[in-house]
Every structure is written in C-alpha cells, then in structure tokens.
Length: 85
Image (cartoon, rainbow, N blue to C red; front, side):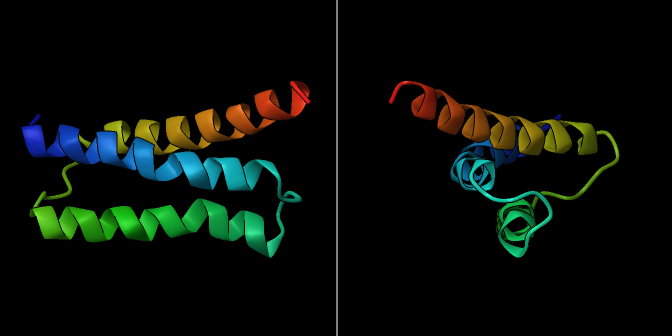
C-alpha cells in the first residue's frame, strides 16, 4: 500500500468527522442525513484525483473503514457532548 493511499485514508477520516457529527443530529433517511453521508465521498474522490492515487481493489476496504470510522467517531462525539450537558 502506498504512502499516498494511507494519507488519503487519514484525510478521509478527518473529512468525515464533522459530517458524522452533523449526521448524528439528523433524522435518519432525511435529505440532510443523506447529504452528510455522501458529500465527503465526493470530497475524497476529488482529493484522490488531485493526489493521483489510483483506486485499487486492495485499498477499497481501507477507504471504507476510513469513511465509517470518521462518521462513527463524529456521531459518537456529538452524543458524548450531549450527554455532558
């Protein structure tokens, strides 16, 4: 796995954090919920093109885990903050 692919996965986690936070406050399957999930996909694809990282089958699980991890951490952070109030 290349360094650029790992950098892209780390950036995907960071990009997904605020979107996961946003998604955590949205009604499930609403337009905002859908946007919070899909906007970071397009941002990461644009980043992949700008970095020149090819999409390989071997790196796809890494990117999926990065997306899911960022979304999950962001939503859990929102829930954690709400529980502290």
